[in-house]
Length: 296
Image (cartoon, rainbow, N blue to C red; front, side, top):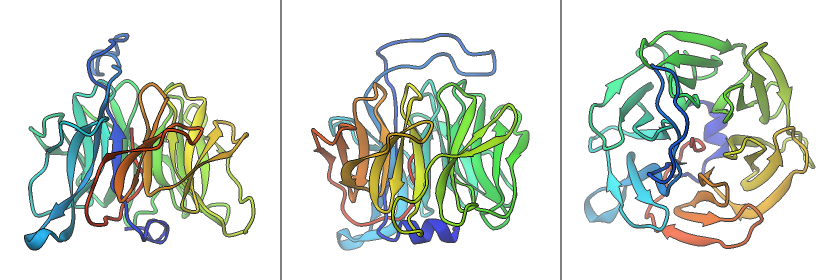
């Protein structure tokens, strides 16, 4: 695992991402893409494996649960560790990390297949049309960002260099990818514009020169980005302006499909409004588990 991730998340985290169930259908994507986006209430996340005596095994499994805490179900059951779960736009498939590779499975956990088989690949996120996945990759985990055609497996490197490139998140309009990088000296949030590969840094330290920002998560309308800043959730506009704290510490987080909630982990699953009100417990999770930020 990259050193930046280990430094940032020593406390540990569940990985979660928001799903959408059956409330509203949207427009068609292309033939090879998925059809529409839907609005709903399920979360996919990384659940601790429990060993004999109720102890945390130190391994994660992919699980789903409703936003109200009901309907919990594990989707993977093995001795390896899975993490970085991400819903496809139509919520028919889940991409995830296992054994240095990106895998994909149906929303019920069936038909698991490996998508990458070379070097290191982690932290997948789907394009809005469901045809591609962006991931961080390279021989050491600091090899830049790649996009991959899910149907053909063809990979394209969209960002390279010796700096880190962590937790990529595809914008809702499909034109940009937000990610964390130490290319400016400390870990900050950058945006890659895909049409011309233009890079823009949207966060900067507000106090200590070593202050870090990490794990960008786009709001559903693409106007705001939630970020991890030295252990706490902040919300900023997509241009980097109007940064404000949500008021909770967190290990990972994502937005609800309607943009009204930020679902986050602080050992257990919680939800809170972006203005800091309405915090409540979704599901208690025993143990501690370290990982990167969410995809949703």
